[in-house]
Amino acid sequence: MEMIYMQEEMKSAVVEAIRALYEVEVHSDAIQLSATRKDFDGDQTILVFPLVRHVKMNPEALANQLGTYLKEHVKIIHDFNAVKGFLNVVFGEDYWTGLLQWVDERPDYGYKPKNGRRALIEYSSPNTNKPLHLGHIRNILLGAAMVRLFESQGYEVIPTQIINDRGIAICKSMLAWKKLGGGRLPKEEDPEMKGDHFVGKYYVLFDQAFKEEYMKWQTSDEALQIIRDRKVEDQADFFKKFKNEYFNRHSLLGREAIEMLQQWERGDLKVRALWQQMNSWVLDGIAHTYKRLGADFQKNYYESEVYSIGKALVVKGLESGVFYRQEDGSVWADLEDIGMDKKIVLRSDGTSVYITQDLGTASLRYDDFKAERFIYVVADEQEYHFKVLFELLKRLGEPYADGLHHLSYGMVELPDGKMKSREGTVVDADDLMDDVVSLARAESKDRGEVESLSSEEQKTLYEMIGMGALKYFILKVNAKKRMVFNPADSVDLQGQTGPYIQNAFVRIKSMLRKDTDAVTTGEWKRYSQLQQVEKDILVLLKEYPTVLSTATAEYNPSLLAGYLYQLAKAFHKFYHDVRILSAETPEAKAFRLKLAVNVASVLQSGMGILGIDMPDRM
Image (cartoon, rainbow, N blue to C red; front, side):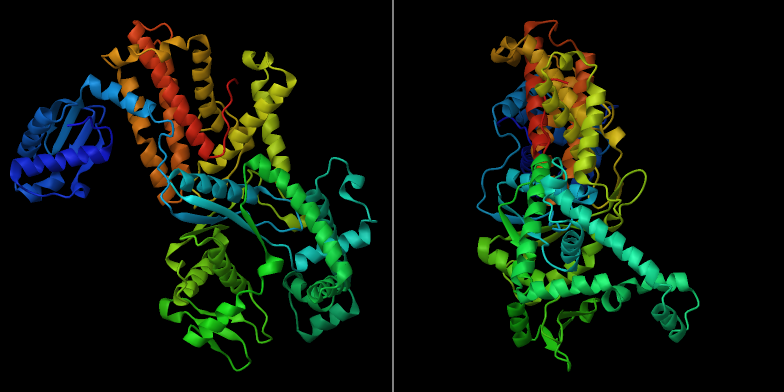
């Protein structure tokens, strides 16, 4: 039998053994394998209990017969021991060197070949009235990581975003700049200011001006009359809830913003020109942020272009009975049969609502790319929206409806609390990235290898470490969980951090700079008497393809992040526990360096999927 390196091959050997011994067919899914516990002798444990019902034997007797057969017929199994219903097998030395060779000979280790399938992943989806913030960072890092995970599994991946470039929020920024900007361009106001920050500043200024207007209005005769008419008892609570109605019916600023939106919808040339100019400032600024975060998009969709295209699907749904029309002309879907409510898809005046846009955009994207998987990376606040959207597309019979997935993620905060962009207290993405890079600089500046670098090389290094710290800290947390991002903790060289993993890679590179010849010889294949710490690393290396597959299937990059930490942790232990460059024999030195090379390769591959660069020095 060929050497067995992967779990499926071991399962096949057990299935073959049961067939030969008992003339019984058992599916490989019934074979349960795990690493042998440290307090028992062995490398891999086969759980015998689930097999008892197939062969009608005592578990310990079955384990002994099975172990005897495997030892005789499977070349790599050197010995075994049975403990009740657990069969612990011991691999021979040739298994471990063969496993290292198997990993070493695969330049794209962990990656599957192209499968001809296509996945479309939507993430980020910014608004063109402000810069990206901390919440966007989590979205972007998750989306970009999922793009690379799906690529690792052989998919052709189309990363897309829908840019929310229309609506009242956009007009607020436009109106504020028109009133207060004095015609100044971003670079004229501040040479260092990016366009998205420039426009975001005017969004905040509008909100501040609106608040002042609203506070002043609350003491006006008109406001007092409304309070009397409505018999208001708690004025503070009333005015807190009345703000939107005030904006739409009483506010002078609100009236101007609404008029600007109406002019935009009518195609007013001056309003459209201002809109295009300010959107271009924001998108140019966001592009710089994307580059730093490692985000890239094959196709951008714009809300201004797609907000009305869902109407054709509504017509189709009316004809098929998916939707129904109310007496006032509005169109609805009744989802009460599956425990959901009734959902409007067209207003009585024929205008679209948000879900109508999403229906149309899904259809448009399918026409554009014929993808079979659609993944939406959107915060958990929109979970119900996507349940409705996916159900409607299924009822409409859309061909991609079974391949839809909402990658829902929780809120991310800083230790000092939440963010409110309209109040000007947003945790800006660019500022946060700069802060983490500065912390990385402070952590690294006293290290000897850093001092030998040029100032430009140091700048590049600090960016790698800082951005690696930020990305890893965000991605190591399961997306479904809310999280607190602590910048200071993220750059710590100890614990589950990006720099801790980068440092393992740097240690390997440092060793290889001192001796590369030993890796190129074949002496490592003659190494025997492996220590447990070396076996532990090989077991982890073997798991890498499975980790990539599982992280993709479960839409969970944190599984990969956790695996990389465990691999780095095992390497740091290996580095401290055994002699590498001064190993006791040439074979041991060559083997340990070859092992380190493959650890570095997997760390670089996995961190690359998370969007993290690996420095040669720290």
